[in-house]
Length: 420
Ligand SMILES: *Cc1c(COP(=O)(O)O)cnc(C)c1O
Image (cartoon, rainbow, N blue to C red; front, side, top):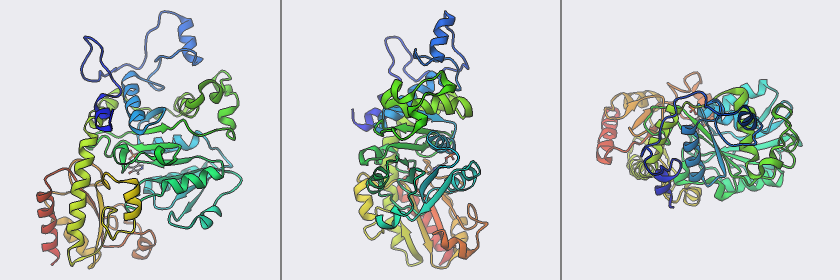
């Protein structure tokens, strides 16, 4: 099946007389005839559901679909994207370990890695993702356990050179984890370029309608965990199971569920998974329209004299055009950022004069929305600090929706009239 078809037909496959739509298993627990059967479930000897914190059928069907979309061997959904990234890391790291992360990743991720995980004794080195290999090599240490980046970073809209970073990580015997939220598997499948684990905030395009927070971790099944004792040694907290021995290619994702989801409990509800599945059904169609609209909006913006700079990998003179052609040949997704020459006040005036675009702290949803990092998400920073973070005071992040492009451009024209 092609990806458009998988969006609809992977996961729940109803048999004769069963519900056409994915059923919601609104139950915390599941019935069995014998104590022995439940014992086997606990020992991971039998497959089945026993408690929704660990697994639920509705969630399970959506996990199957996401694994199929990414081309992975297994997936685990979480209650948010933050939870997905945290569990993806803690599954193979602990106090005393070190990781490397591209510095342009989502702000929430920077806080998680740089503040909260640091308190747990995990050190993170943030690197310039455009630095040459010789420079990046210096960031590796004997205790480095993974490398992390985002396919399309937010709000810089930079494209991550997945193949190059996978090569670097593998030369040091560590996996590459890629947050594929903005691209979605419709536009880029990081496993095809050597990434080992993919994470998502499904709250964005996968859900698509700004209704349900969620996250996902997908395992390619390709990484050899030989230097990760947590996977190759018996887990005493799980009846002495050795994940690599018992589960082979599914070792990583099984451990994430059996150990970390058990202990942390950041599991999605059945209803959340049902909503996510509705979003996934139209994901391919939406990503096509988001990308086409964003391309047209970016070209329109680039032609306006008030605009200092537009960041969109689909533009021929964008810094990331080359990487965009390689990793995002079907479209560069729906998020564009641009700066007004007149700076902060002009950006605020521009945003406040828009009527169609919603002013919200969200991206990657069906309706067009805008955000002014300097006065919203990054308002604690001075103008100098903003520039150091790659954000100009006049920068606007435009998340292009699936409305008719003529209406989106008409709305942007209102913004330009206000600042002219
Ligand atoms: C939003 C986002 C997250 C965090 O996800 P939540 O679902 O909001 O917890 C992580 N990574 C990226 C790239 C995001 O855009």
